[in-house]
Image (cartoon, rainbow, N blue to C red; front, side, top):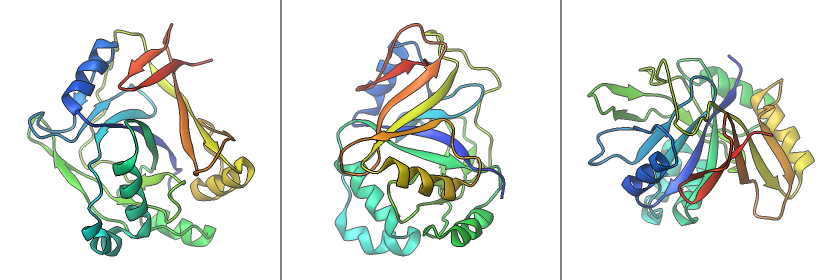
Length: 233
């Protein structure tokens, strides 16, 4: 298994065109995930490291829960409920592998005692017409990041410039009621070394909640939808 690393941070939005316009006004270069007329996501890339995703998460349709669980496991149901019911803002994060599929990740999780749902294969059509697909899997514990394979069609631009100066995501901070236990579990999940760019601090229930995201290159906090991207310390 190639090393797992932080892939991206999701920001839930209700109105994607407005969120894209706000991000552009804050000095970010934004790439639509598909045709803007019907896209459900848009991406903020950096030349290296994790990216940011603006994501529209509709309320979860409970009538589909059994089908979703059969396809993607109980963790997918828990996450869909969470995304669909929370307020706009930082909502989740993912880890990724360079592997073309998640078979090695699934084997690692079995050995590490981490319950990971079955891998499935979503896809979308990029604005230019190319198709992109990837493998995706959700751990049963919705506090842990979900995992994805490499994209079938690379999407990261060769050069990226943001007017506000942001050059890379340096860290995300999570609040968790039991930081020591969760950090140990996260380390088992991703393997060694642990995710140096994920900081776990003491916080109240419920579960792991993203409290801040930091980026290098910023001279001042940058508004990102209803949240703020903070300058790296």
